Image (tube, rainbow, N blue to C red; front, side, top):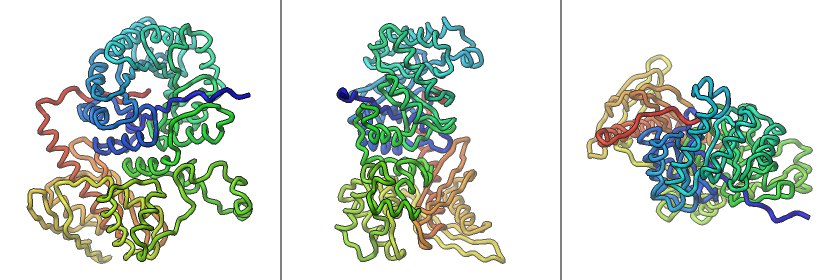
Amino acid sequence: MLTAPEPVIIFDTTLRDGEQSPGCSMARAEKLRVARALAELGVDVIEAGFPAASRGDWESVNAVAREVQGAVICALARCNREDIELAAQALREAPRHRLHVFLATSAIHRQHKLNMAQDEILRLAVDAVRIARDLCADVEFSPEDASRTELEFLAQVVEAVIDAGATTVNIPDTVGYTVPDEFAELFRYLRKNVRGIERAVLSVHCHDDLGMAVANSLTAVVAGARQIECTINGIGERAGNCSLEEVVMALKTRATFFNVSNRVQTTKLYPTSRLVSSITGQPIPRNKAVVGENAFAHESGIHQHGMLKHHSTYEIMRPEDVGLTRSHLVLGKHSGRHAFRERVQELGFALDELEFNRVFEEFKALADKKKELFDGDIEALVLRAEGHAAGPWSLLGLRTVADSAAPAEAHVRLQHADGRVVERSARGDGPVDAAFKAIEAATGIEASLRKFELRSVSVGEDAQGEAIVYVEYNERSYRGSSVSTNIVESSTMAFLEVLNRIELSQTSLRSREERAGGARVQPAAV
């Protein structure tokens, strides 16, 4: 007979470890959008960032701490007083908050990165936990690269930090090196050999370098871990982290086997996944488990026949469980407000009346251009409306001329927030290049284009195209995106969004130069 399911804490680090993934950096407003979505999703802990990394990261963590309700807000710090105090200050307005301190323990890191002996590592870890505990009742400690640390020394560190006041001890597989059986033995060893282990929650944090982050995390749960650290869509350093949607649905689908529970509202997984994908500019692979486009698609005749007989023949989850529906082709230009509202809600989005009215008007305008509207089209409209941040420049007009025998030409008409209207023309190697050059001439900002991507957000010859641009300006990287059935227009709007970000960031930087504190440090690799 099964005992009552034990709760497992879902610790989301999308805003910290996930953001460290190349190309996934987020502005403060974007971090707030993701944090609010995570709180609505029902995660227990949101790791909002690494405050000592930069002034901007401190401000983002502080904003999440002030404005996001419903979850414990956590911040990362190295094992030194300055980092810990900065993190505590950033978190001080959160009703519930946690300080997360880390220090590498493996022989490889001790020798090649830290140049420290075991006794020095032990002393620093204990001192840091004590400092953090004086500032916060909820303290987590992570021995970085734990999976490659000698078992006896790891047990010694874990026991010492629990005695110093750590309430959670996280065991990271920092480089994705371990395998399930080996990792399970590590957790069993700690539970058997660490005195006082019952006074702390054992946590797991896995990377996906060998494609086993989810499997290793689930194995750790079987071996006694009661917190899982993960990210939306599995984003993170190198190959990424344990994927939240995959590990949560594994626990739900195999509930009888794992016999644990969690607070995640799984019907919000799909919209949250799409939100993070839109903000970070990282497309979700079609074959991605749980939230990929093909996750609930069936093309094989044998599979289709089985599905018609009973869904369980080839589906171990229902699409409704993760916030998806069966329908793809649903709306067109004759659809009314009620049908559109229902479809938006079925896709898992909640809009207030003002946002709904704006999106509905954009939907009607798009429906006049497209023969058929798909779920992807509606998602793009909603996400664009939710993420719209007015910048100093707005596009009043765009005209391009492309001729195979001559350079392309573009003419743009922009309006600044101060009332100025500026018109400029330029030539380029194509209409997109010409439009970019005209916008640079109009705004006076010259940025280096590093990457340009186009992808379809739906299907068909009249599908909407999402343009994503990555630029570099003053040694900083910026990303912008936009969606339209006209790819030249979406490319132009994406580039203008980037230049707006640059102008806003430069204005913000100038205004806080005198009070900016701390130099940029290397990202944490917990």
